[in-house]
Length: 444
Image 1 (cartoon, rainbow, N blue to C red):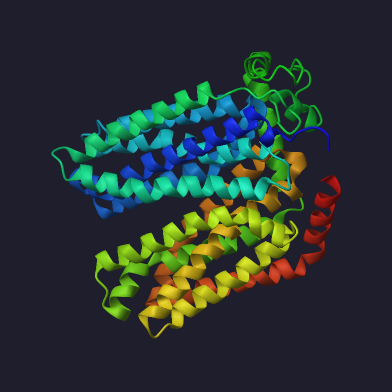
Image 2: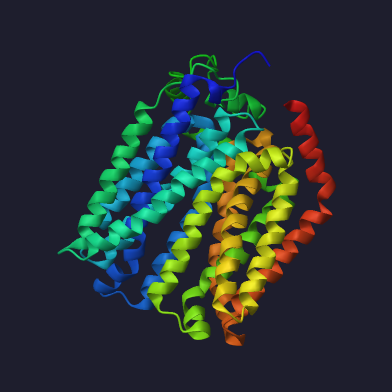
């Protein structure tokens, strides 16, 4: 109790603030360019089928690479992995800026599909810096800072695209933002307190010395030098073997229930938004602009909800399982209410509750993953979680299309059923989660 936790040291606070800026700039740059991609593909002469294939390939790359890159960050160190991912993503967005045909465009999506995991690594970095009790609050603030970038980015991108050569200007600006972000990570202060920081050498030791014959152990107090030393001491093959064992260790662990809950909730929320604009037009005759305002309203509330994680955690006495269960119940009722809403004001009400419940639920489920699987390494766990969400992104277009054959309200109704299924799984696994919460209190 006498030692200050890392987030209370000057370096710990500075690192958190830097990572918040990194998250903001990351989503700010991405959200400028992503809404313009389909329009740009069309201008290059791509058919809807070609655009769909390229989009699916990007999703598949994200599916497989997120776990690998997350585990790799456990081995080589957060800072080095984060800089690498940001710079290679900048290369991809730079290639978009010179994509004069669909082939260059497709090539440009490959490095981004493989290495665009800077937010996941930033979350793993933050989880290393703070205690378990403070983690939900810190993660919530990071999500809020990132969401602010996602709110502002489309506005700037929409303005720039109206200029002559607007897409190329936006791509160049996005590339510059990512390069600045990499420089910011490079200049981040080194922390002097490594009590809660998973350095590469400590991470390898944590996993039973998977590559002990290929790694020269580095003293954990040398945080400013251990990344380069450890990286040079490892062969490429040793890193590959270590990544494989770490990812498979999570895949065959007893965490299937929390990952299944994450998948069901992610698919439920994505089904809610899958045909939102079309459903608003058919059900309430709303214009696309008014629908956009409603979506922005929900996004803004979701960003603000991240700041409530600290007070809520204290209110729930840091029982993250109960917070997740209650937020999932609220998500279920919000989606169900939207799917049967006869009036527009009910849709606005459901969007309000859903924005808070999904923001809180996303943070809680990441915290539970890190608590239940702490022996596997935070980078690996967050990466596998992102892969699970990527599976949902692949499944949702199919589920949404089938459900819309039944009714415009079909996708959210199916989403409500899946959210209810996640609640049932959490209830059945209650003893497992309660044990984790009790262990967490004992450690604190």
